[in-house]
Image (cartoon, rainbow, N blue to C red; front, side, top):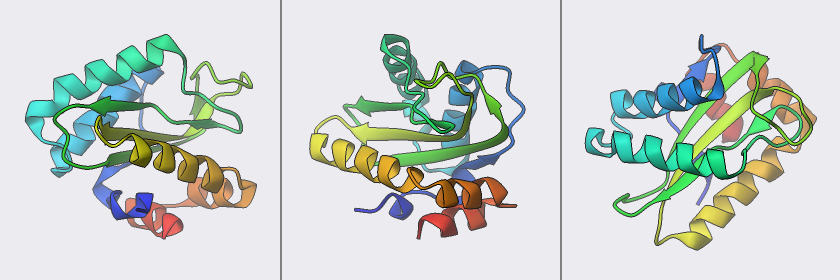
Length: 149
C-alpha cells in the first residue's frame, strides 16, 4: 500500500507559519480534520499520541526530514499529512539540522506491518536528494502528491 494512496492535496501544508514543531503537529492534525481525512472525534487523541511519541524520542531524521507518527486504536486506515517548510523548522533531528519535509503518519494500532512498511517507504523515497528537492520546489498540494505517485 503506497503512501500516495492516503495523501490528499488538502493535507499538504506549504510553508506554514509555525513557531515550533508542536505547533506544526497541531496544525497538521487540524488540517486532516478540516479536509475530512481524519474524523473530528479523533483529533485530540491523535494530537496526544503524536506528542507522547515525539516526547519519547524525536522523529527528526537526517537531511531535513521528520516523520512524526503514532498508532491509534480506533483508526480505520492509514492517515497522512505533509508539511513542506523550505526555511526549515527545529525538530531535534539526528543530524542537528532543521526539518524541511515533515510527513505525519497516523496508523491503526492493529496494523504494525503497515506502520513499518510506510515508515520504510518514506525513508526510502526521502533518501533521494533529487526527490527532496522536487518536493521542496512544489507550488501546491497537487504537485506535492504527484511527486509521490
